[in-house]
Length: 71
Image (cartoon, rainbow, N blue to C red):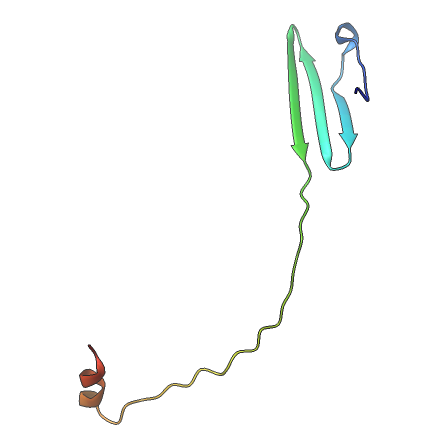
């Protein structure tokens, strides 16, 4: 199935074909045909609130108690 037809002999400027999120650019430079395609981004953002407990800092009463707990 073809949506667009263009004769190569009459291409003087870039031909841009867009369908949905897809964009294709066709350029002819001398005897070379350049085709570039890109798909526009489809971004889905999900935001969630996740409750967390507050971080509590517990300081040991002495330095030796802290050192003993280290494996």
